[in-house]
Amino acid sequence: MLRPELNELLTQTGPGTPMGELFRQYWIPALLAEELPENDCSPVRIKLLSERLIAFRDSDGRYGLIDEFCAHRGASLWFGRNEEGGLRCSYHGWKYDVTGQCVEVPSEADNSSFCANVKLRAYPLIKVGDILWTHMGDPAKRPAPPEFEFIQVPPEQTYTSKRWQECNWLQALEGGIDSSHVTWLHSGALKSDPLFKGAKGNQYNIGDLKPFFEVAEADGGLFVGARRNAEDGNYYWRITPWIMPSFTMVPPRGDHPVHGHFWVPIDDENCWVYTFDYHPVRALTPAERQAMIDGFGVHSENIPGTYRPVRNKDNDYLMDREAQKRGEHYSGIKGIAIQDASLQESMGPIVDRSKERLVAADSGIIKARQKLRKAAIALRDQGVTPPGVDPAHHRVRSAAVVLPRKESFLEACGDAVTATPGVPQTTV
Image (tube, rainbow, N blue to C red; front, side, top):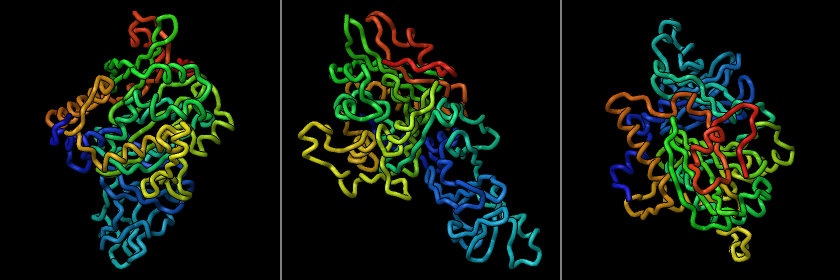
């Protein structure tokens, strides 16, 4: 169990909170690049770490992320006009550039002098891969841009989606660290999902219901090893990297693309889930890419024009009890992403961890909580830069491998869990 005060520390990410300040040390996903597709396109409302913001792209293609509300009377700039190098409030015509600087107030005779003293809160917005990233912390401590492998490979080798999840970021993240649920919750998908089926590793997942967990330190977070029995007295290891604060990668299956997630707090009761699939050495096939677009694998089918899943808590995730009885979907819910979301959201907006009863299979979750707590306190009390800020920490991979019983998974798999351009993933 976790004491209520520690639960609050780990789950609250608004301005001034220890965990909120921790998140503000990193570049975090703010939008998909597709949300701002062209110069002077419509602005986008976005909430991150409990801050309400507006993202836009100006006439020169520069990206801006600024306070949602006009400095004049507080009207939302989502109603503004994106024109001629800035975003103009529709109420009285005040205009702002991508840095949040007010550049025009039509009612003032001495426009330039007045504008010089009006500036909205603003954060940088950069495109790396198919994601727009922001850093919401001290500009003097801004790290170099992220270097995760899925945003470094050519565009034809990668795909990223996004969905809204209606619960706190931490209980969503913890699902990404937990490999033991795969054997149960996703058992149907291992047999039928086009982005999972056919891999030898699926047999080990289904055949051994009692995985043993071993957790090892990584420069940026942890490596969580889940061990199951394999043939000839060997072990099947699935190695999940977690890079602080909220990046996880699912161990690969055969030659299928490798996938993973970012879990980004919207506020304390909602989060964005950015989900990626990529292959280190080849282009995604048309069939693979279409399956991702259609919501297979770890992606979701969303309501058109939104990032809210079609299957959501308002319609009980379209649960099919007959499919559950047939074993088609273990929980009666279609889709790996929504199978996870349905149970994580069922815990409530912020789960009460003082009531939980953890077991040995939860060792990765326990270690991650400890590492987050220590990093947040060290940052708050001593100004210590947390793990995962350095882009060198991003160069990791997940792996799936069969090893002799006596071999340490991390000693044997050092190269396998390091992202090396042009080298395929280590997989079973």
